[in-house]
Image (cartoon, rainbow, N blue to C red; front, side, top):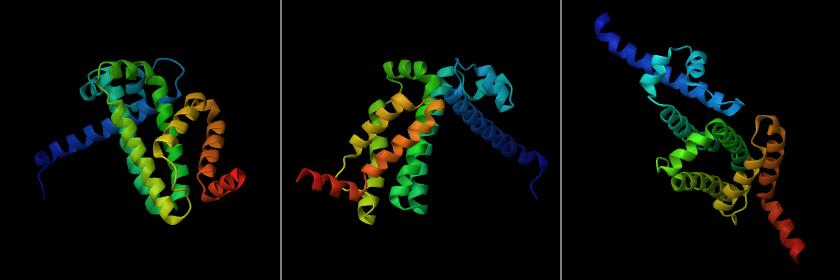
Length: 202
């Protein structure tokens, strides 16, 4: 059996990881729902840790914003893989779009910081777009193979549509409208929708 002293570093590392994950989750929720500028003190309090613990993980507000942003991007990628393993592609895509909407909402309370970081070159916007387009293409390829999504749609076009929807309907009090619009997007990606459109053009 490992001695008590030898297990302590592992315990401290595990606690630090838990604290970091809790801080990211609390910050993401606060950035998405708060009408006012979120303070680091309130995030630490809601996470159940001291402000010193927050600063040890995220020395500045920008460091926390960047960490939340990148954590949400990773979750989008992981969510896509998990959904495609358990759902038909069209259903998986619709559920992933809800994850995408949540990610967009997270940006609501940190948009000023993100803009400053983008201007300073600290965030790779082109890389983010490429990552999201690649994720969407994965859904489209799987859906075309399964026969429940159109195979003639550009992933970048879908991303542009999603960005447009969320620019006007991403606020928490407009989530019902967001869901309706996302339902329309997926309906338009059905092979049946393509056949109907082709028939109408004849």
